[in-house]
Length: 420
Image 1: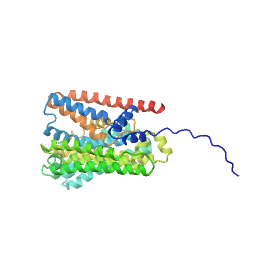
Image 2: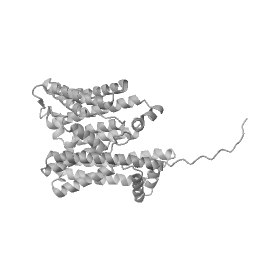
Image 3: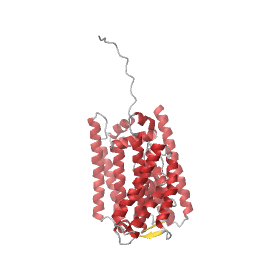
Image 4: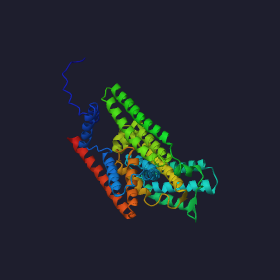
């Protein structure tokens, strides 16, 4: 038996703010500006602070020394950024799930020592040595995940212990000499020091990046429209891809006036694109953000939280191992200094300065390249001015505090905006 009774009116659902931003994007350039302003009001700063910081660094150091934006200095700056930048990619992964890895420097040093011992001392093929060094990074990540998931040891404690233990293993592998020189004519050293993209191919990469950005955005927009959701207009997507084409083309042209774009930089950008795709276009990425945002809610939603933590630890250690291999190749040697000093701090600082939240659940893969460019830009500018490294540490520390402060303020702003 059924009766027709009047149903109470359904309360209006709060609007999806991402849909609001997408709707204003449909209105052209004015909509883009409006959408950006709405994001700022909601506390979503995105990459604007780090882009502004890079512009400020470029202007200030160029005024102080005209060599700062020279083709040679820019090429050197990019090549020097790659090893620590790749390590910072791993830090982005672990920070997104609300954890930390303090041992990435030691893991990178251990992988470089394994490369030197297996390739030079044991005479194994360089490919075998590289695979073994990367496998060591994978194994370390698995070990960390077991200790964290099975025994509940905080990641801070686990990785602090790893920092000390693996640095000891590195010293043990290198032996009394403390250094192993890699053959200069080996392809890994040549790749890291002397291999640059031909000028014509660098422009092909730029065009491919612009086309790929448009195709990815268009496909995503098409899926949203098919689901009945608002989506970015084709005009906006063309505008965004055109801006990338012009800016990247101008930058590559400047680099080609000297040696060009290093292949090692291309590898770094390829890893960044792969991680960006995984985080933004796969269910794994959605789960990573969910775990970092609220682990208990993610668990109740049916997400295998332990598996997400495992993947984050493994990715972090693996990328640290790759960074260590490239650092040794660029130096032409594996020594006791690889992975020590400020490598740990610079990798973590790069991820945070680039916009990854220390509180978990917010950030992108692009935080690593943007953040390391800020750090290396400061270091390069101060070196050109013949200023001491103490000033570099002070300036980098100030920038790090500013980045964390902006993150905290944006979280507070989003919280108050949501309640409003």
